[in-house]
Structures are given as C-alpha cells and as structure tokens.
Length: 351
Image 1: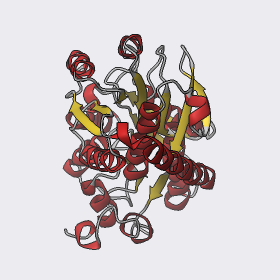
Image 2: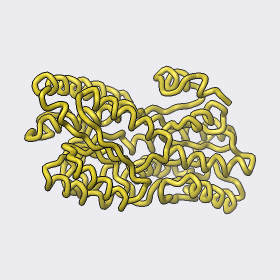
Image 3: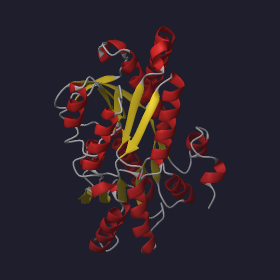
C-alpha cells in the first residue's frame, strides 16, 4: 500500500506545481477554461463527495465546471456528454456507464479538439488523454486477503464457501476488483466459489436477491460474501439479517466505497471490512489534471503530467495516475476514517 501512497503524494505535488505555474503564466485565460465532469450516477452516497471535491478544486484553479450524471444509463450519458461539448468544455472528465462502448464518446470529443480524462473506471478501445483512478485490482486483493485472515481466526484454516458479488456486467472496474478477489480464491484451494454474479446498475436490491438465493441453495452455510461496492454489500447484509446471520463473527462481508452505513456496520460488527477508496485525492487530482490539460492544449499529456503508470486500454497507452485505498476494520476505524476526516466519531457511532 505504501507504494500507491507514495505515488499519489508525488503526483499531487507535481500536479499542484504545474497548476500553479499555469495560473501564474496564463491567468488571463484561466477564467475561460471550462471543464466537464460527467459521473455515471449519483446513486451511491460517495458521489456527492466526488462532485464537491472536484468542483471546489477546479474552481479554486480558476475553471468553470459543467457537472452532470447519467443515472447509470448509457444513452443518457451520451446525451449529457454531447451537451457538454455544445457548452464549450475544453476538457471532459468522464466516468463511463459502459466502459466497453464509451470510447466512441472520447473519439467524438477528440475530433472537436476536446480532451477526455477517464475517471475511476477505465474505458476500453478509446483514445483517452489521461486516466485518474484507484487500483481496482488492489481493492479486490485487499478484500480477499482480509477474508483469508478472517477465516484463519474464525475457522483455524482457509476453507469455506465464498460468494463474489460483482457490479455492472462488463464494467472494467468490476472486472478488475473481481480479478483481485479471484486470484486470492485460486491461491487457496480450500475455498469454494459457490456464487460469482454480476449485477446490472450495481443494484443493492439485486445483490440482496443474489445473496438470498445463495443462502437458500447452500442451507445458509456461506462463509464469506465479497461485494464490489458498498451498496451491494448493504444488500448482502439485508439478506443476512433476515437469517440472523448479520454478524462479522458468523459471516465475512466486504464492501468498497466506505458509505456511512457500511462504516457503521463495520463499527457495529455486522460487516467485517470496507475498502476506503479515498475520494478527495481522486477528485482533486482529476480536477488538477483536467486543468493542466486545458491550460496546455498543444502539450502532450506524457510531457506535462507526471504519471504513475501507463495502461493500455486496447486502443492506446493511457497515462494513468493512481490514488490511495485503505482497508477499514472495526479496530482501525478511528485511525483511518475518523482521523482522515471522512466521517466524525459521532457519525460512525451514531447507532
């Protein structure tokens, strides 16, 4: 984990320095910069934080933000994207609904001289100018490693029946997170994957139905549920509660996004772990990257950005910046979520 944290600290410092240079050298045009920020949804609690942090940073740099979201609908997102182009966005930061088809929107923007920064979910087969993301594979890996440690403590060995609750079918983030989990399962032959199900729209309700079916078919003998996000983990907890099994002493449940309810579940002992995908560094870095690209319309992203890695998305080698993730347990909530200012103690321990 320290590797990603070090990457992020270095990248933020470089991006901030470049942004300050752009403002001082070109303050006359800074106010004319328009940055589009298009999220796939506002369904999850975390996206209010994404929006607030992104807008605050971009506006502090002197840019105008055009914000919208797409209610997890691909055609709606296309219309919103086209509207941002019509409004004169210089750069659009895009979290795609469908990572498999969103490349066409990037090509459309590029044809009009508008750059696109990928946000959170890497789209495939599109000429992205840059990508700002967390390491989704590492998220799944952390969840899986935490499950292994839980099994050692609770059962004395790494054996048991596991359910993997995936997000949107075909989504690159869901695939990457799940691959991290699956690597852990494959490395431990005593684990049996009894459910591996994707869920349209990252639906909590659909995840609950999958969990109910899994419990029924296994006579409640499930040791662990690993979910790609917080909302689906809440669906799993709801199914477990109906069977009197919503306890981290009985069934391991992992989520990701650190929604408040899930952090409260961890504090209460209903949920074993949650992954804190730190939103502020992600959103602020994306705003900084967009501003730098907009301020240097003729500059190559590889020359004007300091990146952590280059990822080939099937179309291009995409300069990529990685921001931090943290495993949250009942024992470290105060040292992570609370100390980091994500939630207060009063919020975490409200119930």
